[in-house]
Amino acid sequence: MTETLDPYKGADDEAYTVRPYAVTGGRVSGASKGLPMEALVQADSGAQNARGLTPEKRKILQLAAGQYQSVAELSAHTRLPLGVVRVLVTDLAEEKYLTIHTSGTADDEATHDANGGLSLSLLESVLDGIAAL
Amino acid sequence: MASQPSNAAVAPSDTPLAPTVVKIVIAGGFAVGKTTFIGSISDIDPLNTEAAMTEHSVGVDDAGGVTDRKTTTTVAMDFGRIALPGALWLYLFGTPGQDRFLFMWDDLVRGAIGACVLVDTERLDQCFPAVDYFEGKGIPFVVCVNCFDGVARHKLEDVREALGVPPEVPMMYTDARERSATKQALIAVVQLAMQRLKS
Image (cartoon, rainbow over all chains, first blue to last red; front, side, top):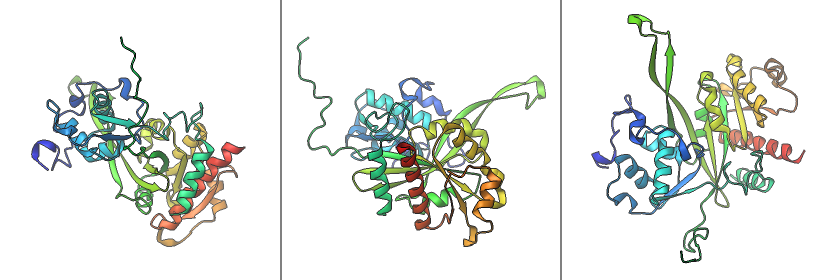
């Protein structure tokens, strides 16, 4: 891992070398606000090589290259706050660098009713799955 | 504009469908064993995510006439992930320990199957905010009395009375270090959510 791709390396105690929201250009909400923290993100491998990306966006694309990573996992691995990752991920999706998958989350109308309750069939699958562990 | 068939909604055939993600919230007081509980069953080592926020601390430090200053506080949440058959991923999110961060829980519980409240009977009061929160929001939750050193020091019915939770809230002993006990607790949460749906 190169220095440029991991700006927070070795900065465990002082997690941020810049104010957290500086990397989002000061934006805190918008379309990203409701993005579930368990929503999965997947980037095309090679997307991180695109020009003009900030180190934070590059790191996110690298982590999600060819595999699913939740917004929460991206936050943990980049050591960026959840809200910041939400903004960056939403930007990257708008720029078509990555895809956001919300199947099963509160944003998925197929698995949640209007009150936010999960569907019985999904719960049954989860129950069977846990029981089989 | 030429009308072209949109293929935006159709995934390319070589792309497998993304997993369906569900979550269960693990709540309880500080150092009650939430991370141990998550780690006992998670496929990945529990990860830690932070939500930084800017707080106004008014009048805390009055020196030099500064009565309104901003400080950045970080709130840490631990979480884990379990892959279930049928491309189903279950996330377990631990709540931030201190109850002054209760406002963050709305974000955490949105779309969750339900919650598991871990209780340390030596520090019963620590789980009151969690119990109040889930009751208030109507979120299915089970109460798990964590038996440190594998010893149950209190009867479940005594704990129920002390917490003031109604009979329909399932209560059980658990051992946060034991995968099988954690599994039973998670099953109880899902079963409760299913009961709620059927009733």
